[in-house]
Length: 268
Ligand SMILES: O=S(=O)(c1ccc(F)cc1)C1(c2ccc(OCc3ccccc3)cc2)CCCC1
Image (tube, rainbow, N blue to C red; front, side):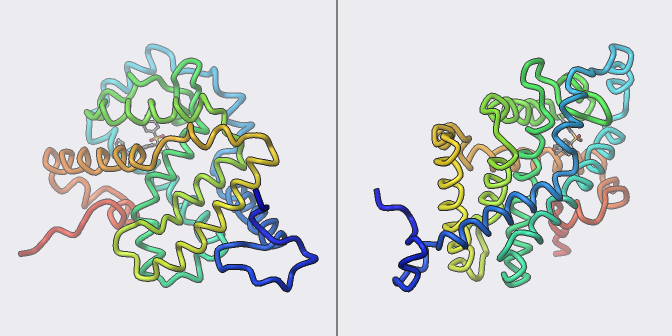
């Protein structure tokens, strides 16, 4: 099939807005990979050396006996830390800061937890189903006191699916950028602008996969419905937690987490 872009000798040819030049393709790929590398929070090599360091039974017990609200507060703080890196990733993606501020917030509100799950798969050991948590790798059981083991096991399953694909940092970078810059997010004002960015990312990602003979993973990447279902479940569990511990979320959860996941109480 015709290459998705004109080569430089025809640089004067009229490029339909969705097609991208070879140079722009290369610059976009560098931008996405660098934005991810600079904001990935934990380096792959550091996670790798720890991946067989699991919590001992006594340590597991201590997590088990933690009160639900304490465990929630710890996880919510880790989420907030992780999301600060995700916000930084977004800001470094070419085109994101040119979007209007409303659309930047819309994309981060809808995509932050999804990107957190994609990044969490980097810290998942799919050989013993453990995930990096507070310095070591934890089994599912450790999170029992959160009272939302169905949410946590859905996250584990998701990380397992991605872990089996053994995605490279480049692939995770593109998967993250395309998840964030999703033109189908509700309430977008300038959908067209996000669409153009998304299409350029698609061309660049396909180009990378072709170059690395990894086209096969496209059909194996989880559908976005799966990602949004887990994020929906998180919001439901957060709601249940707020019913059980009224006031804790408002008093103890970081502002960024509240901004993203807790809708203003309707004062009606
Ligand atoms: O280290 S973590 O706290 C962690 C928690 C559970 C787990 F199984 C593995 C890791 C962290 C994370 C925290 C909450 C998450 O969902 C939302 C959630 C779930 C349950 C309670 C509160 C929030 C997802 C991930 C990993 C990435 C960033 C922090």
